[in-house]
Image 1 (cartoon, rainbow, N blue to C red):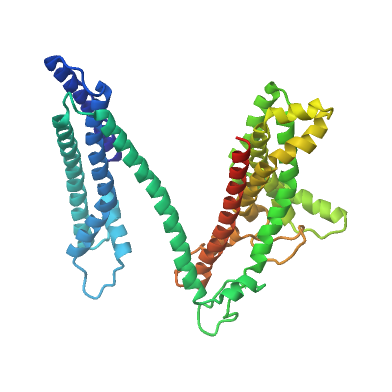
Image 2: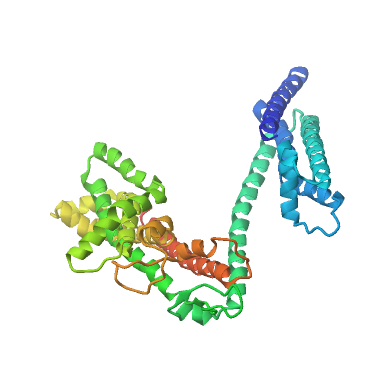
Length: 457
């Protein structure tokens, strides 16, 4: 249905565009007057009245069709006396029989009848959908054509429609953000109603397991998140120790020393690092970097873990180099050329100019780049899962395995868990704290960059 509905809509909007354009041309020819708007705007007006109602019908059908059919099936289904059916399993079984007759063997007559009804309702819905799309596009086009005349300002109307569409898209983004925030807050309150917030923020034991049956050993889980946050910041510090100097020195070279040919070649190659999937970095860390770190630790007398914060941090640092180098390069290039010329004019060499003039002038933007890179490092998951492990370990030793907030969120949501379980709800509490931390860093970075831009625009 998806393919043919898209084809039908495309045919409809093309036809409406041609129809609207020919309509205004006929009016101009018959009246010999100049229209208030160009032909294309009148055609776009008819197209918009054909497309927008069709999209509303399309998405409404996509959202509500299956639910309506399921409700009709459940309302008409004849339950066998004494049999216990789960609605979800029942509907899945009916859909399987409806989609493949081989699944009907051994099924009850009630299931077979419901499957036949399901197929009939789906066919009726599909036919009704196509008819509705055609009717709504025709009616929309006819309504728009009736409004077309020489004095009609189609350009202003189209611009208003575009404005409303942009407002709608912006509203979706804002409402999605609000929904994310409220979902985190609501579920976090449910978690903190069962676990003390002081235990969560200040306790040093993380054992998020609850008993399956009464009297089971380790009946009380521990939800102290200090080891998780400590591991998060330990890996972030290691990553920034790699990314900060390499990224900044790369930016200085590209902006102040490299030729345009070298810059156009090296900068895109560096930015490719940001496009590599993080799981690939994780594989590289596990296969190459982690064994090297273990061997290096043993060579200097340290019992290094096969998975460690150092291995994950080193690879994560390489991953976020483009965030620092690219942003810092843009910031350094934005420093007015007159500052460089003035410094060189009073006898300073190039290195002194960079150290004493360019870097202090670009410092706010560089700090903003660092903060954005820190936010990226804190939110990383796959590298840590593969290279650092999942054990909550409170340590400052980078050769030991640690875990991070994002990893524990994944672990908490693995498996068939109920959402009244403290173990599952702990993911939302961790997510809320991580959200606050990254949001604060992003806001701080944007404010610093804004201050920089206002000063050197």
